[in-house]
Image (cartoon, rainbow, N blue to C red; front, side, top):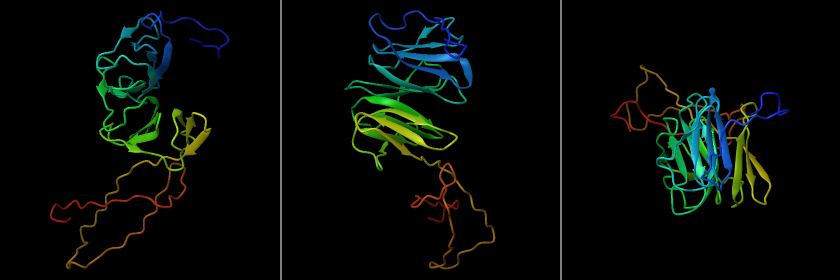
Length: 231
């Protein structure tokens, strides 16, 4: 750990591996700097809640695989997502209790290493050996996110809140950028609005903006009536 812009470093942990590995992923909690998650290349995961004063082994629910990346929730230090390498096992896991228990949220992902994890709003993006996938339901289902991205291994993902731009670092094909969209729900309240015939209609003009305010050319919009008798 350093507190003087890396001019000097101090040790805040023992060997956290099983004896032959290395720390392969580390993630301080944004809302609590004393909470740090650390994963190793030989399958260990430790958590400290006192800035390295003591570390707890937290591997319940995790496979014995290389820990590739860890992301801690921005507001909840006990909630985190990690990814692992290897095959024939789950690859994305989530905890809500500081790592005491981990839940497999790999869903319908292909059986390939997951190298990077990125949370933006309610969406989880992951970089895998087969490109980028995204989930908007905490990993219950995953969808390929490959618009403009070649079918290549993605080793890192990063996002800037200031610019609203995300970056994907690939193996051998350089870097790619994209602007993720944040989902929103808009409720229209019009108690005096009535549809009296089957062909009655209402036209609404909708403009969807991305995270920096630029119009989205082809947004996906769905509608649902609050009245259960109306489809």
